[in-house]
Image 1 (tube, rainbow, N blue to C red):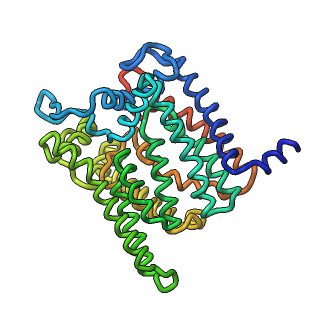
Image 2 (image 1 turned 180 degrees about the vertical axis):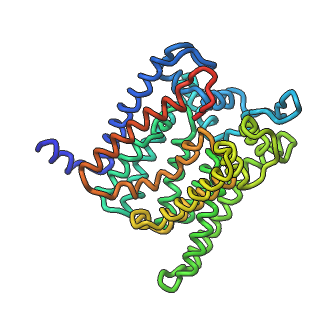
Length: 394
C-alpha cells in the first residue's frame, strides 16, 4: 500500500525513469547472457565484455567514422562496383560520439552505447508527453512501458544511431501534434542527418498541411501557421536529400550514397541501379521463389497494414501519427530490400505502440510485456549474436 501511494504521488517523469531503468536491467541481462555465449568473431574475442559486445556490427562503421571521417573516394570491388563503405551511415551520431570521446578521453566502445542509452531515456520522456497529448495518462505511461520493453529495445543501448533518431523523431512528432511548426525546422534537420527518413517526414508534413487546408473551416489554419508549416515541410524535404548531395559533392560521384546503399543489397540480387519500389518485389521473389506466392504475400502484407491504419485503436492516435506511420511505410517500400535488418528499419514505427497500450486488462498488459521480453531474446539470438559467418545482420 505504501509503495502504491508513493507511486501515485510521484511525478510522471520519475515514473518514466523508473520504467526505463527497470527495462535496461532486463535487456542488459539478456545481452550479457548472450555475450557470455558469444564465440570469437570478426569484431571481438570469445565471451566479450558488455561494451565490446554492444559495439559490434554497424557499431564498427560508426567507430571508423568517429575516428577518421568519410572517404573522399568510393572504394571499389575487384569487378569495379562500389563496395560497402562509411557513406551509408549518417554523421550526427558518430560525430557527437567523437566530441564526447575528445572531452572524456573514453573509447568509442564505451561512449557510443552510453550515448545511445541516454538518448533512449530522453526518448522515453518525450514519448510520454506525446502519448499523453493523445491518450489518457495511464495509457500513455503503458505505451512507454511497451517502448522500453519492445522486442528491438536492445537497440536502445548499443552503438547504433537508432535511439538518437528516435529522440528527434519523437520530438518532431510532438511539435507536429502541438503545431509548433518553427520548432520542427531544426529538429527535422538534425533527425534527417542521424538516420534516413527525412523524406518520409517531409511527406507526412506535406500531407498534414494539405489535411489542415482541407479542414480549415472546422479547424482554422491561420496564415502564420501556413507559412511555418510549409517552411518546415521544405526544410524536411531539403534535409532528406542533403546527405545524398554531400556524398556526391565530396566523392565526385552524384550517385555515391545510393550506390553505397545498394552495395549491401548486392549479396542478394547483384549490383543494379536504384529503382524505387523494386527492392520489395525482388525481395519477395528472392525469399519466396515459388511463383506467384512471393508477390502475392507482399500484396497481402501491404493491404493488411493499410487496413490496420484504420482500426479504432490506431485511429485514436490521431491523424498526424497515422500520417507518419503511412508515410514511413511508403518510404520503406520505396527504398529498402527486405532482409534481417527489416525489423530495425521498421523501428521508427514505434509510436504505433500507443495502439497496443490501450487495453486496460492487467492480464493483457503483463502478458504483452512478457511476450516482448521473449522476443527481445529471440532478436538478440537471431540478429545481434554472431554465429560464424552470420548472414542475419541486425
